[in-house]
Length: 320
Image 1: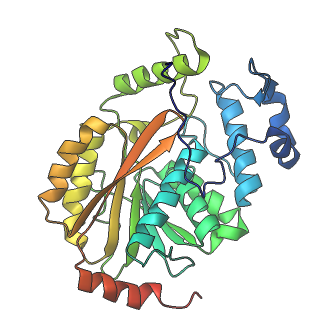
Image 2 (image 1 turned 180 degrees about the vertical axis):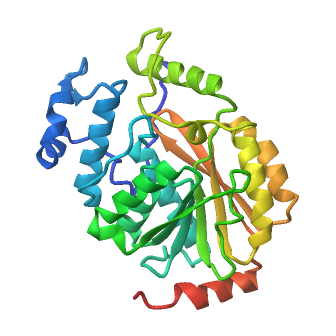
């Protein structure tokens, strides 16, 4: 019997669960057409190792599916793979539904905090356009914040629902961002997962080699990325542990704290750090994108009584 790897589907509500419809995307954004070619499988595709092709595909996807007509990011900043980012939002919606009798709470009565909004503003865009949620985005990079704010300002459909807060202390993650009276229904975070610039380069070479099916020894970042986006001292474990530590200062300001964990082997140490803070619930949600498996951890400090009160006070309110 042949042992064939099974392609794992995206979340069932993900707009990108089917293969890219390049003909439809080109109609939405004709600028994509020069990058679309017939591949060896006799289907339309792009060269995913080409940064400009990936950027233009993202613009087409955001315009076609999310009504974002103006999306520009500075050169060399992270250009995110949209289907995977969308999966995080959809599984997060399921997490909210888990504590809401199976119903995903929608509308601008729900507010999320995106730690590390980056220049691309991708999580607020998807979360608002699909579920109507409000967002606050934070970052330590002024250039990224300015770019995200420009995206917000240049798209009427999200301008009212997304705001930005600059983190002035690079040692902090939540402190200095969460204010005394804030009530966030969730925190999303895609932490820098490499420990150094060298690690990031090795990871990029591996990615481009996989995309091109060649042994690549030199490559640019086809998805871009600044230092604070891709690496930090101690990598994602150190970052998430600091986030966990700070989350204890704001136990009643947020329902669910969550963060992506890129490497499965890091889960044990991250779980240990979270458990030490005595959360009421700790969950790990697995996501599958093609052959890739990713996951995020989620924890809450709210007791069952506090969760019920939170939902009555916040989720039951009528949208503005």
